[in-house]
Image (cartoon, rainbow, N blue to C red; front, side, top):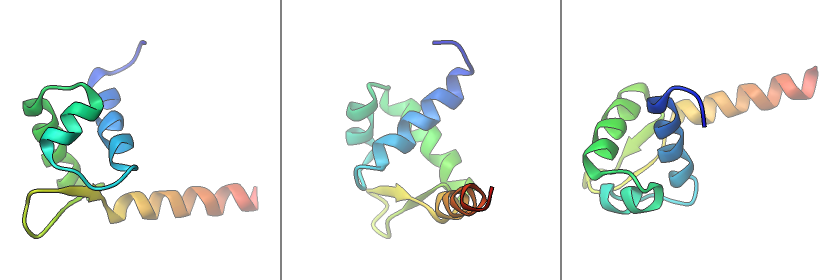
Length: 80
């Protein structure tokens, strides 16, 4: 697979969260990525609003930015 590895890995994390919230270890298992990589990606994705961290800070789920992007994509697809 060609492309930018960090982008591919970030999308892998996002896809893994589409099945439900999870902690770093579970996401690492779902994506077959090292926990340290998953933790760094999650930190960036949280900063961007693509992922939200639970109040207990132990689990992560999809964030508002993804909802906004998907709504925009759905809207533009519907009207084009």
